[in-house]
Length: 230
Ligand code: CA
Image 1 (spheres, rainbow, N blue to C red):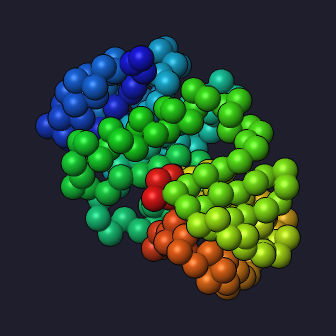
Image 2: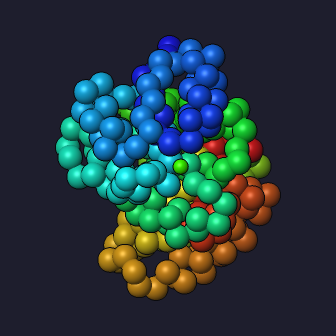
């Protein structure tokens, strides 16, 4: 089942490469080479997903994403950001404005397509994601209603907070979560304070997870991500 994907990138060679590979994978692709065209295209064709370069000739990809998120009709469209190496600040801002994932240039088309398809799968099965009973990642099993966690068949005793943190990451597995986002959802804090609290708790959580500790990955300059596969 193909999706309608809008590729926003002003480097025409790269746009063509991405579009070609997405079409090969069975998707329908439109392209835009600046932010204003991208916003107009989104209104016109309501794509299922947008691949959005950060550096565009008119407005930045970050600003495009921000505007999409502000409008109800476009707020839920998944966005994958393309960033250049070293655009650490843009990356963080990209997540703050609600990008679903990012890929750093230079990237392999295969990597980009895997990321895109993982997002499309999540979006197409919202029912399963809304109320999961059990989340399994390799040897890690989370019994959601029972508040129980097992690693390699052994029960791990977590505090209520550690359980909430693990569950929050697990529900959004494959997607990076900023420290601010975690603070807000898991701790109920307003963003911008005490981000070190998150690091401390992730460290303790990893220690308890033992053999499954590697599933909680640190994404430098951004936050944490639970792997979707072992
Ligand atoms: Ca560019």
